[in-house]
Image (cartoon, rainbow, N blue to C red):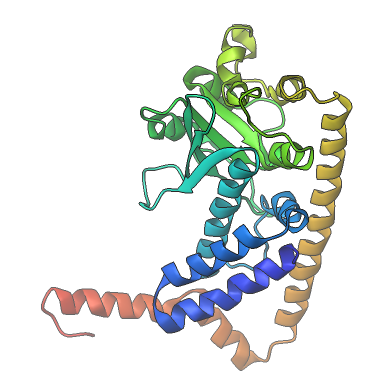
Length: 299
């Protein structure tokens, strides 16, 4: 089962969610599926997870379920490398994941980040670095999992924030590297150093470089920390770049197809689609419901 199959199931489960009026059912079915995936299929999912498909409409039920899939995949990533991991059941003002070392005395919270390739410039609020520091609470570490190539390329406030508040700027690609090479925590292997790199960097970086992208330095630190040859991180980045370019071509093909489909609309169909896209009827119903709630008659 590949990434495209998972996306098709997201749409299928959303329909079931609408019929049964319960998002929990869709989430549980998705989680059961992801947990049962063979390792090779799961790694394919990890490789693709950071990019939201363009066919998933922004702020839709499908996007909500895709976000849940990302959380489920991240939780399994932690389990694959030997930690106990669970999803937080409460929503809002919390991280997505709680994970705890089985062999060593530490715990962490983590958040799964996904982006559209069509998304324009992102700002620091998109990464929630400072929020992660708050959500850490009494846990030892806070880990942000983002697509490698979606982090700002050169300078950004998020790098200084991560150093200041000791938040790990981790990536889906790092997890792919660790899992595919069989890296797993044990009595002899303590992975806590991976989650605390920002603190290490805080002691070894010049003030003038605080806003600079430090992922190159982190790459070298990670392979050294888990005793892998330095070559594998370059191979990982090359593979990730190829995968991202391939996805880009797929997403472009989808968008060009939608453009052609829209150009072929009749006038009547175009009007119906525009009304739907602008959610005019939903807005009318919402205002009518508000008027009714305060004791007036719908207009």
